Length: 134
Image (cartoon, rainbow, N blue to C red):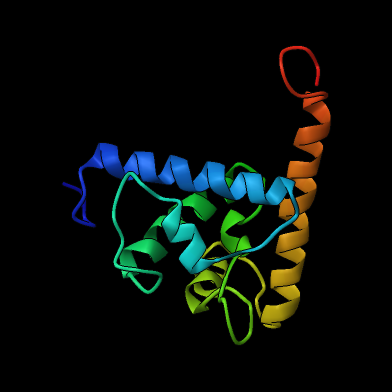
């Protein structure tokens, strides 16, 4: 069991599921509410979008993607109502990663643009989809 109460293999699978799901949204230049993100994670069960373990999962995804130079992928996960932005944990993580978050909205918009740009380039490199190019 890991620190979040899951088998390490299940947690790793959840991290992979979450990363792939967010990459698909980045390629489509879309945002996703926390509740929809949770619904797409099947390797572990969360108690809804307010489960603190979810925040840890998103943090691990963003740390790994940021270290790889692809931006904070969890910038795409937002509140369904209200400000339509990531929660405070996203900005706390950004601060720990050394980002200037004095103006949180400006930082967030820049990070979303960075993530979109990275995955648009990845799609262009791959070329046509499918075994027959279509």
